[in-house]
Amino acid sequence: MLKLLSLNPISNLTHLGFSRFLNCNKIITGKSRMASSLYTTSCGQASKLLFRQLFEKESCTYTYLLADASHPQKPAVLIDPVDKTVERDLALIKDLGLKLIYALNTHVHADHVTGTGLIKSKVPDVKSVISRASNGKADCLVEPGDEIFFGDLFLEVRSTPGHTLGCVTYVTGDGPKQPQPRMAFTGDALLIRGCGRTDFQGGSSVQLYKSVHSQIFTLPKDTLVCPAHDYKGFTVSTVGEEMQYNARLTKDEMGSTQILLLVIFNSILYQK
Image (cartoon, rainbow, N blue to C red):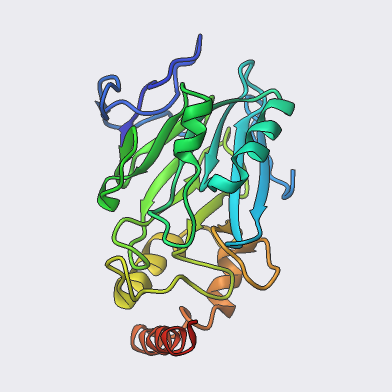
């Protein structure tokens, strides 16, 4: 596990962000730390998570705002911002007195334009983040096992390809000072009672099945599932629910693959 030091320093922070990308500070190998809203989570006494789920109606995209509200600087991250709602998101961040330090993408989006570029033009100190495997452009290119610190809270990077080659899931940290239950920001890999399509951008139904089962369904069952999209009015689920009720991913590998292929066929047959 890697310990990632500060890319965008805030005074007196010892655990904030990346180290091995572009102008990032040096990397330290080994254990990264000592063992240790809309939805309710609890933390240890030292840290408090501020969480907001935001929605963009045209692409049915969820953007997530997280911050360490107990830190004097209130460092914050945005996950999957959309260009059309950047003004709204930045206004909310200002209202809440937060300092945005990272704008993260779970993957390269095909159904909307990411808001990271626009955010950086308005808040130059913000660093954009995407996975190295995505072949996308960003200030910081993350890999599996990396940890993204904002104050004393952090997100773990898990590789979940299948919708695209470069999809990742960001999972809140595990430890006494981290939010409980944990939260998984799954992008398009795992949706509520569904999953992302796998017929473009290097997608693979077999790979998606393996990604979800090895990287998401192995999390505690009370982990909150926070997807990048929803088209039926759902907002949040849990790992346990999706393991039980997600028809596309709860059969054996062959059965799930057949369902995913049928979904792809129908989406191509009926697309306008």
